[in-house]
Every structure is written in C-alpha cells, then in structure tokens.
Amino acid sequence: MPDKVKVKLMEKKYIIVKEYFDGYKLYDSDHVFVAKDGIIVDSYDPSQAALKELVTKPDAIDLRNKFVTPGLIDSHNHFTLTALKLKYQVNFADIRSFPGFIELLKNNRDKIIHGWFQGYAINEYDMEEKQLPDRKVIDSVFRDTPVFITQMTEHYAVCNSRALELAGITKNMESPSNGKIGRYENGEPNGILYEANAMDLVKKIIPEYNVDDYMEAIKFGSDQYAATGISTVKDMGGTGSDVNEQTRVAAMNKLSADGSMKIRIAFVLPVYSLPDASKKIELWKQVHESNKLKFSGFKMFMDGSILSETAWMRQNYAKPENVENAGIPLWDLDNFKKALKMLSGTGQHISIHTIGDRAIVTAMDAIEEIKNQGTSATYSLVHCYKLDKDIMSRLKRLDIGVETQLAFIHFIGDAITENIGAEQSKCLFPVKTLMADGIPVSNGSDSPVTPFNPVYGLYSSIYRKTYTGKHSEIYSGNQQLSLEESLKTYTSQSSITVGWNKIGILGNNHFPDFSVWDKNPGKLGSNIDAWLNIKIESISF
Image (cartoon, rainbow, N blue to C red; front, side, top):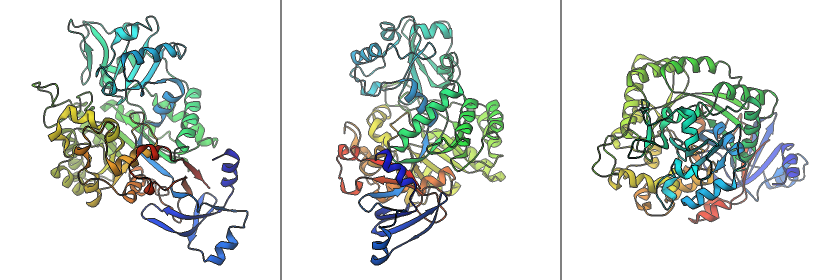
C-alpha cells in the first residue's frame, strides 16, 4: 500500500469491511468498526441506505475489496535479536552447499561491524553436505577477521579460528556445563559451539551494539514486521549474550516515549541462571509501559534443540544409531525450581522453553509444585513438540498454555523426524487436539529461527507439509487446523499468552489494529507460492 494512502488511512474513523475475521469467527457481510482516540468504540451491521451514505464520508475507509483480520500477533519471537541481525548481519538461510557458503562469505567481505563478521540462519539439513562448514572452511575466506554464524535454531553456531583464538578456546579447554565445544577426532576445536554456555564463550567478547544501534535496528525491524501484517510481537529477548537486556530496555523505553514504536511490543526478559533471576526481576521494574510497550513476563530455557540433539527426551535420538543420547537439561534442576519459584513470586507470566518430552514433564512437575503452594503467576510451555496424551491431560489440569511455532513443520519437520525417528514423530504438534481440549494455543515464528512472515505459520497450521514433503505424512494425520482455527492462534488465542486484553480481537474497547490482506487465504488452496504472494499490511487507526 503506497505511503500516501497509508497516511490517509490513519486519519479515518469508520472502517467498512465485508470478508473479515474478528478474532473468533469468519464473516462475509457488511460491517462497520468505529475507531476513536486509538480504541474501537463501536461496531455494527449497517443498513444498505446507511452504508451508501457512509462510503461518501471523508472519515470512512472502504475495505470491502480486501480480507480483514485483527492485527496479527507473533506470540513468540526474538524480535530485538532478529532486528539486529536484519540490520547488521548476513542471512545464510538460502545456502545449499559449501561452495555457496564460501561465495556468500566472499560477497560480504565488507559486512564487518565493530571488527566482526556475523551471520545467522544457516541450516546444514538444507545443504548438500548435510553438515555445517567448520572453522577451516571459514578460514579460507576470513583468516584475520573473527567470524560467528548461528545455526537457524540459535542453539548452536560455527566460528573461525580467529574467533576461537580471541575467546581462548583450545584443545585443552573442557566444554562448559550444559554446553559443548565441537571437536575434530584429534580433540582440536572444529569451530562449532553447542548451546548458550558454549556459544557465550565467543559471544561475550563480540563488541556490543550501543543504544542507538538498537533503536535503529528496532525501527528497521518494526517496518518489516508491519509489512507482513504483524501488529504485535511478543519479544523474548536474546538467547544468551547476543542481546544486552539493559540496552534493550533502554532502547525500547526511548522509542516508546518518543512515539517511534511502529508496532506493539510485548516485552519478555530471558532468565538463564538462579542469580540472573533476581537481576531480571529488578530490570523488569525499569520497563516503562505504554499503549505500544507492555511487560509480558519472563522466559526460561529448560532444554535445547532436536536439530542439535540437545532437546531433553524420554527416549534416545534415532541418529546416530546405537548411541545413548537423550539430550540434556540446560539447568541444574534444583536451581531451576528455585528460580521458577522466585519468578512466580512476581505474579508475572512465565514461558518455559521445553522441546523434548522429558523437559516438558520436568517443567510441569515444577509448576505443579508451585501451584500447590499458591501463586498468581501464569505459565506456558514454549515449542512443546512432543505431546503424548498424558502430557496433554496435565497441561489442561494445570492450566498451562502452549506457545507453538507451526512453521517449524515446513522448515525443519524433515530434520526433526530424521533425528528422533518416525515413531517418536507421530505425536508432534497436536494443536487440533490441544485447542479442542480448551488449552490456549498461540502461534509464532520464533524468529530468527524461521521467517517472521506469519503466512508460513498459517499455511503450516492448515496443510502441515514439510519443505521437501519427505515426512509430510507423519505431520498431516488429523491435526490440520481450519483457516478459522489457524487465524485464532495468531489473534485471540495469542492475546491470552501475551496477556494484553486489548489486542487480537476486532471489538469494542480493543485497539483498532487491522491486518489488511489483498486476498482471502481461504480461497488459495495448498500451493504455498500462492500464499507467499499474498500482500498483508498492519494498519492501526
């Protein structure tokens, strides 16, 4: 939508729609929403006579030739981290081979910020070699400049010899607790670092972006998110030392105060250790809430990723064969319980990263113990891939929500199944069952893990096809959502997880956040290219 038209729309007061979704149901009838002072104050079905007169008013906008929904909510997104990467780093998502990797490095020799080359989104499962390029491959292009490139899950990364040298990572260094230093057969580090504690050995020496860098990145990222229909994002912060949370708070507060916030930010603080819990509680008190900025709780990381084989499972991984590996917890469990109890004492929402079923059960055990003692805090489990019937019944009983990312099926579904096997994959992402049981299910991208464009998550919710189609039959079954159900996970269901009762619904006393689509996705069929050609824009009146 051209900027001049967009500015004109912002001045309108009567929004006329026909094909629309209000957060709960799909409709195909003329309807009017009335926005005043940043709130929907009325809505009604107009008579034909009233409608004919209304469309001539200068303060009315007619969207009856569009498909309209509430502003979409990405309920689990590392927005600030993504924004920094979009602004200052190199995207490796399209790389399919070592030669392509080397070529991209060469073509971006000048993309050095604060003395470092950084990249993101490389995925060895999409590459011909089916493995990450190691430090020697990077050294062939960057010998003297330190390089750090995160894998798409953000749970592991590859760096070059110069980065290892600056970080003091040598053959004689032991892997940190709850992390791993990748090695060649002779014990020398190969440049691959698994989980935050290992990656932070390098991350902590990379020069930090300053407040102005953060502000520019957040503004840049906000424009790109709004252009895909996202009006609100639940920003989970960093995954370790990749985001300075003090700087993030300062940047968000400044943008909120001066009116530069283009989208609404539900602000979450990540917690990595018991001492960190008390620090983050103090930092929470520095967040200045507004109509564009809201504090939405804390996040903890119970386990890792299936792709890095660090998600904590009840059964062993299928590959490599005959190896006893069921993943790892990222916390000392006693400290986890203490930190969870401390955070619960704030009464705020707590999201817990749990991918493996053993991690899920362990987190639920800790939550149940705290609930039995009495708490006003609320909880959700993040990612939550592997949900057997026993787990789902406990989620409902304990009133725990699920923050899912169904775009994972499209982007990494094949790799997940390769790593845990077909049998363990049969109970992955059972969102239809969760929703039928009344368990709140919100959808998001976990960007930068998958692209933040919500079309991927919506498409995957409905069709559940993997990128290559190799293992699509495992994910299809009876868990496909309807368009109406899928849209709920990005609107009314997500508003519950975010804890912001004025978003996600087109109704009185809600923010007038609209996503305006040039096509009705319900009429596009299963061709993903048709979906990706949809133009969506988030507009607030």
